[in-house]
Length: 74
Image (cartoon, rainbow, N blue to C red; front, side, top):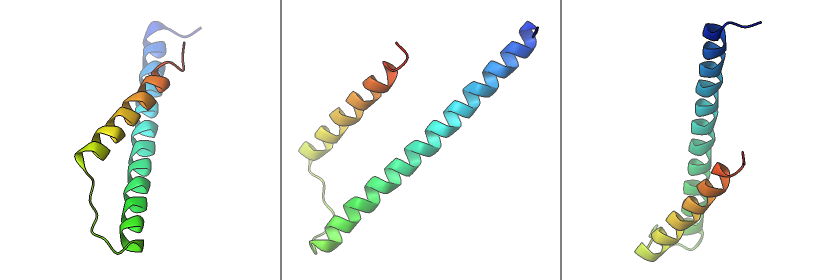
């Protein structure tokens, strides 16, 4: 049977690994989104622009996604 100290260490390891995987996944998704925005701007031969309204829409979408992820464990 694992001691309390071993259980805490395992929990911390899992926590660190989960945070690292989440950070890497977030960075890759952000990189992919930036790439798609740049591709669209190049294809349309227009400078990359994002209006305040588009920024708000994106923020609401991200917030909704985070809410859904938080509810996964329930």
